[in-house]
Image (cartoon, rainbow, N blue to C red; front, side, top):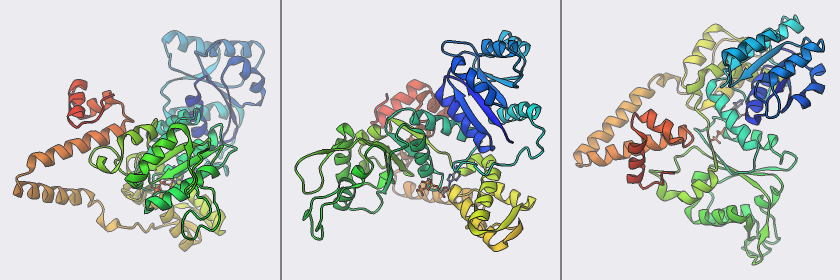
Length: 454
Ligand SMILES: Nc1ncnc2c1ncn2[C@@H]1O[C@H](COP(=O)(O)OP(=O)(O)OP(=O)(O)O)[C@@H](O)[C@H]1O
């Protein structure tokens, strides 16, 4: 698809989600939060997406004004208020389609495609633009993630990204940074894995000269390097317990001490942390819950690729394009068999595994179609379930032998609750629904698990 779409909506997160979706399809997206700000942009647009209920105006009234002035730009109306009256009014004013919020990605893309086909008769309709963005996904699950990232980009709160390895936590952190008011500042990442407390402290907060053996010069840490921008703390779950209190203090007032200095310093940074571990619950003794809540002011869970396999074809397409560019190859696509193989795989290494598999296959093939993907552990497919059964049977046998079955069941329940809490971003009503218990029962269970309920 080619063209420029003007989105008129006063909800930043909606604009953000629509922008991501349409940009991933190669479209240019411009936006305005109000009718007044939209009007001067209309001549640049090939299609319009209008919200009905704008803060000080109404998208339908804007459409009416445009049509009266002879403007015929095709319009799609997007609204939480798809009452029959609105639908009739919208179509009367020449809207091509009226879609209900929450947005359904494919329906929106279809409507925009139809609108643009009025303006262009470009046959390369589904080709991805060379400017396709680096964080992709059009599945409903990723749309929710993009919405949450949009909310995060619009403020300065701490963000905790959770999800398995390779799901895209770091690229998501960069995305939030790029769309935040700190975009012109630095994005500085530090991986907390395998760092003893003193090293982590020096890395993060810096040190005075002579602070420890070998510290011949004073040095700033990552926190200072990130001033004015974003500090990304990767694998936060591995942060030594002893250091967690220091990080918590820093998060409270953004003050810190370089190792070996006694005067505090200050750095204005936004903190985004990421983990593939369960920080609350079973591992609680390893992670302070007060730090968890401080970091998870905006919790965003990125689902594993196996739960959004509909994203696989577009990811493959982009990785092929990137591999062609980086390695000077001429790969045109994949065979239907490979497509099937990719969509049947459970991708334990998530997007990273997919990217590596595509790059490996592309480098091997050089040109034409990729006809095979070497998938690590493919032989174990779909043995995930039987591995799980074996592990569970073993745990049950052990618990029975030790007369500890109730403890195991409690532990399983605790894990289920904690995973559901992470999955639903802490929304207890959704968690209660998922566990098929009432909200009160869930509250009681959470209390029994000694976690705060609100
Ligand atoms: N949605 C996506 N679109 C395009 N590329 C992606 C996406 N998600 C991940 N990737 C790519 O997959 C690789 C892994 O992503 P990233 O490092 O962000 O994952 P992660 O969740 O931080 O992993 P880890 O927990 O192991 O640090 C990167 O090369 C990244 O560019």
